[in-house]
Image (cartoon, rainbow, N blue to C red; front, side, top):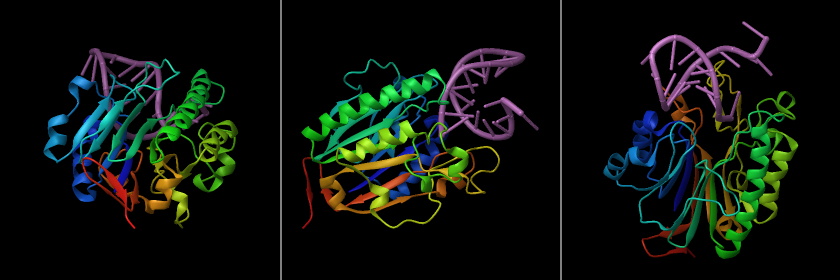
Length: 266
DNA sequence: ATGGCTTGAGTGTCAAGA
């Protein structure tokens, strides 16, 4: 089973790249963030044409999440309990025996801003919800744009970013708490190249200069982490014309998925 | 230098992203 996440920064603009990417990589499940498209305008036909089904929860201009999959989803949920949030940032669904949560964590703007307070409150509700989901689903995968770089090695210039939004202590602590409750950062289960990032600013030729952050993540419950055989960042799409500023992250699980069930191979 | 791109809204120019 191959799981992936990609903040596409407008599905309308990036649709050809997404179709190309799924044709090449054939993920079983692809979580998308920042689709920026209302549900009535979602490009379902093109995605069906590529052999994928889709769940989506979008809004005009901002935010918006979607989950593309090769098999049918069960029990979709588009809202987080305990948080009355008009922003479309969450989509959960079950594939085989794996519960998948697609998340677009708020950006936070700057640590002094009201948006930062919203981000921390959102993360607190997210943590409570994931605790509950873990108790119901031992096979849980949480994928998305977390807008948090967990460690210094996830930041191109830690001294420059220290205390700033995306790398502030309260945000990193919120991320750490998720690991503490039994969710593992799939990327760090394996040896990885130095300067591995998932986002590079559009400005100042940041990608070419390797000035990035690792803020898109795949978290796996212990049971899924044991079945995980690889996790990587695909920075190829960042070289495209009109790229998203984020790169996809991919996790491979030693798990067979079909429409009714999934099992971990011996 | 709170700049530097990109997107969506809407058709001039701003909010928001990270």
